[in-house]
Image (tube, rainbow, N blue to C red; front, side, top):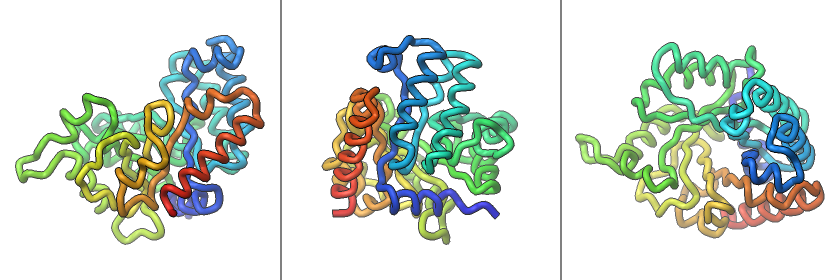
Length: 277
């Protein structure tokens, strides 16, 4: 059987540190590297970024939207990112934030966590806000193939609290209910379960129990204002399970490969110290 994603991720973090690098090819960032905002420029940007970092970071997190905007040629580049990242020993978390119902969720599962698909990644982000149970086909397909799912829980965008902090009939927050579901998914798994939560690095300390027995993706380090030193305040006792994610604040130092590697190494060490002491 395929080794579970939670086990693979835990080992990668132990060996390479907790940093997750977002591959977010914003048009202005691609142009800052001296490349055109077209499929050819996208391809060169991603090849250079992955080649510079794939031997030292635990996880790459490509943002699907920035590839989709280039149509089929952009998706071809995304497929190559997955292949190249795996060849360098890094895991791939597809940031697609999919969420729907029934056969549509199953189709997303077939695309992102089934090895028969060229877009298959080690894990994918998903939105539970059509009801947590709507994600069941994705969760089950990922588990069947040893892959993972990161479920949006507490996001740092200003509109997120309208839904995430709302109270359910029993007085708990919606976010708290999602966290409860995730704990159940991961119950009895070691060292980490394969179902993670997405909790923004810039959110206020949430007052929720973030120990879900699995990984906690923390986007927002760097450009969005989050810092490694802020992570213990947000995640508290669950901080050893945190996977801080940085994208533009790292990639803007490119395209020089040496500078990318040195910056990634510094960020990794800063996150390691902040999270583990």
